[in-house]
Image 1 (cartoon, rainbow over the protein chains, first blue to last red):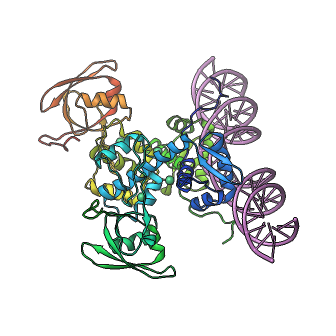
Image 2: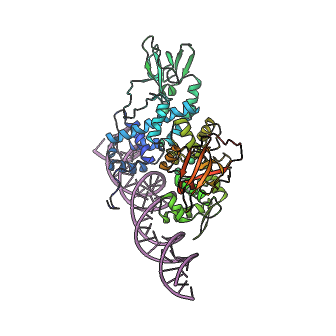
Image 3: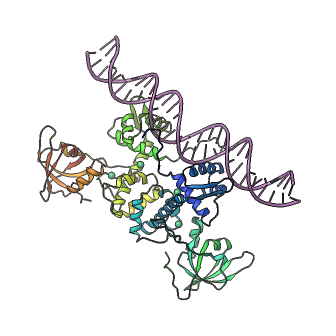
Length: 239
Length: 239
DNA sequence: TCAGTTTATTAGTGTAAGCTAACACGTCTT
DNA sequence: AAGACGTGTTAGCTTACACTAATAAACTGA
Ligand SMILES: [Mn+2]
Ligand SMILES: [Mn+2]
Ligand SMILES: [Mn+2]
Ligand SMILES: [Mn+2]
């Protein structure tokens, strides 16, 4: 064992962990994550991504097809899901136990996810009762690396008359999250689509059971992921 | 505002934060922190310290007297105390709210202290009721940067017959901490010094109020910081 | 089909922070 | 006063990860 032998499994750096997470999100629908998409999400310049892609594929965490993009290997996917579990448990812990709002947790979790130990995450998960969903409705991967795959549709695509449960909110933008919470649009809420205007117009909904109406513009309606509710289904309680 | 202007107040790096903390501890009795002491505590090579010392004194966080050592500036001391507050609140939060043992918290806090926001620390401090001491009895600096200065003496130096309150335990070594907890030697405990053997021999004590005897070797007795108890003083409850 | 545009990669630079080997300073002992 | 020894510093190298400028590949639309 000389000073020349490189450490076989060095711990992942914060940067590597963040790259794996965004590659996971960008390629989770099956395709490739492109250099510029990764650069955009991480707010770094494209050549920085090219450099990191080189290193990640050298260490076997991703597969790189030049000029096409990257995908996670099995190992890369495991690490990505481990980070996503940490992130979402942290978000939930901060909201449930320390009074954070759902629009403030993301930034905090984004840093803490790299510093906590696996043991601390599991203690938090226990304190929270082994939760399934984070404050934004996103599923929490298990410690074994499994994640729930759900078939959801954006409110923007739901047909008029559909009875829906809001399940996930697809943004971390604090201003949007505050507005949505204000409108009562949080995961678990039941609603009926009552109208949609043409030419990418707004969707009008009625909240259940109150019947309160809401008008949701196209952009926000794209972020509200819903599932169709069978009659008499009450859904999960809102958080 | 050109690309050439350096950021005036870049956030401190994890390394810088750790250097400031150990310099604080090494120079808190008034003297200089030496290169090799810093290197020893951080487990880095002496030239690494020389390099960092250059940068820290360039940025005004420390004063460097070549070949003699370093001391914190007012700004450096502020930052060090801010980190110590974070560290100690984290340690207490992990023990009180997540069931950590007092011998496991240090390593976790050592990483988290660099990742938490000031806001999260204050939320934790509130959840804990604005605590004054960490699980090892060390005083927690206030958010304003004040720290309690106490006159404590090591059990090893206490005269036979003295009635003492154990206030701080001066180690983070997990094995030692486990043993001490096992012996009932945690901050807040009252005891009487019943005997001391010569030639750096062990100290024998009687725990109050039970009267249970304990024999404490020289090395451990050096780590147990105590204050003399006026008659009828009950001390703080043990944690 | 090919010229123009968009996207990706390469080349080269910088900063933070570690290391070893070589050298310099200060002190203690004779 | 002079070495000798321990401690501190300098020189030079390495890795991770950013950046800009220059170049190469891929796509697109006339
Ligand atoms: Mn992150
Ligand atoms: Mn979330
Ligand atoms: Mn630390
Ligand atoms: Mn402590």
